[in-house]
Length: 373
Ligand SMILES: CC1(C)O[C@@H]2[C@@H](CO[C@@]3(CNc4nc5cc6c(=O)[nH]c(N)nc6cc5[nH]4)OC(C)(C)O[C@@H]23)O1
Ligand SMILES: [Zn+2]
Image 1 (cartoon, rainbow, N blue to C red):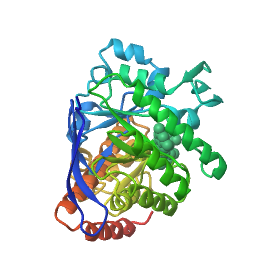
Image 2 (image 1 turned 30 degrees about the horizontal axis):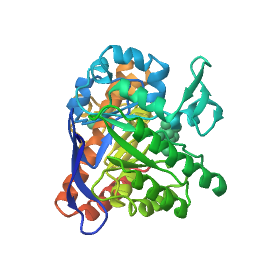
Image 3 (image 1 turned 180 degrees about the vertical axis):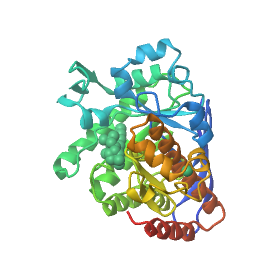
Image 4 (image 1 turned 90 degrees about the vertical axis):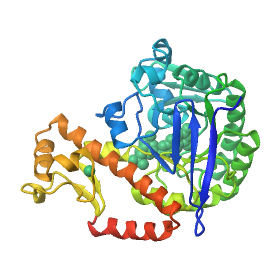
């Protein structure tokens, strides 16, 4: 029985942009979509209630972090991640592979799986395709990701060639290990920045067959134009009737560029991480709240924004809170930045629906440049 269903509603006539939606047992998610990152079971500094007010439809959790702390068995004891964190809409969990490569001291990588030391206490941990699916089953996420090998950038082509074979074998084992019919499973295409290897990897992963397909191995330090080129190339080899998810991306500009190239789903720590560093996104570009310029400013962060922060507080006050190291600064900044990203993708959906996405994108990118960096 298939629960996960993606409906492609409209394709843009001038680009590969499209609008659609998918449904899980926890509800409907419209695409293109931005997914706030809640790595260890919380989108940092904001509550599930505030996330709903902002308009979040789906959030991310992470297998690696939740397995290490508090433990997926503990989360399962509480009835799974939705109950544990009190979020009743969809959740997508990453498989843990990428975090092993980017966070922990890699001990050993074999065909069977990867052994690493926990970045928390140095404990030796083994992660295999089967183990990753077991953890994600315990977490009870609506969408699971396969365990893959995300190669670094840059990376020797000969290594990437071998790596996509491992990634395809692991993807197959993940699909075979899947237990709960109500959990969707997305495949992940690798291949580094080599188009011929991206084509092979896409064909291998599509051949196995998944509910959706992610582009992995990007947003790992490569230049933007390479990320756009690989995205443009790879989406042509993915089925139109399944969602495409570009992992770890990105800036507002990246989202506009990659929607145009056929991507439906995005996640990035940028809105939340930058908020905590006082870097705010506005219609006219980025704003550093700690700047002297805002000391006496009674303006909202963004005059076009109707988020709770912009409706209630001035730049002068937000600057004061930030300089004073107040926790409220982190919360109000995060509410605004997440609202900015979620509103951006909502406007993108409307622009595609109204057949004016290219014009919308051009105007948005122009406006982002006005305010400088
Ligand atoms: C953009 C920004 C701000 O996001 C930060 C930091 C560095 O990039 C990020 C985001 N990029 C990113 N690429 C990914 C690729 C894969 C992948 O190939 N496989 C799987 N399973 N998961 C992935 C998750 C990914 N996240 O990756 C970490 C290291 C999580 O921090 C993020 O720069
Ligand atoms: Zn705002």
